[in-house]
Image (cartoon, rainbow, N blue to C red; front, side):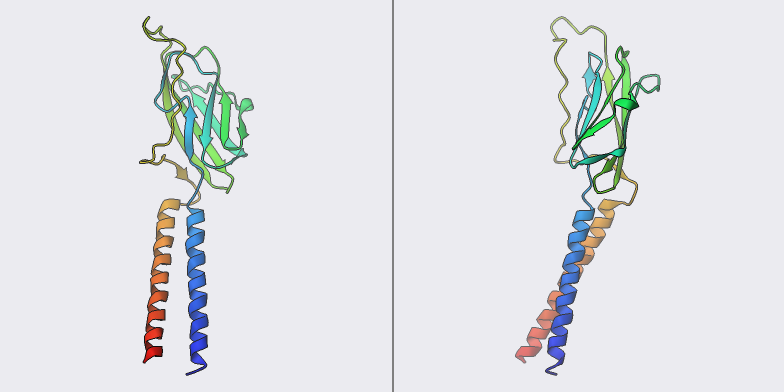
Length: 192
């Protein structure tokens, strides 16, 4: 029995380390880059044509494999692919001037630094009709910021990270509870 106790302790310690590693890996894997803000902002109404669209993400992104496409009221692209660039967490693309009143769609496909793809889109409205005399024509629209109560909708083509992360975290919690139960039983046996 004396040789069995050290062996059981090593098995329990190994199981605890493996469980902790599983939980840490799941936490890291579920964190992907997400849209933090945009200019023009989602749902904004502009009275002047923007010259570019900029998107800011929560993590650095890769230029290769990423793109932003802005389409106009007639579903034709007004963005210039050759001007697409990434600077750390910000991706931007120039758009053609002299746009007409209507809704514009900003579609993006971003390759995170960790290799995961995030795709989504949003719209803004352009109203080039002259605003009323009391309104300022040079007032910029505010930049959208992330609402802490909601998360942006994104699609990760490699896996469903949120569902997978919950499962792994749940399994990790069960494993830790199991280790605690085994240690408790062994401690009771030792007292007896």
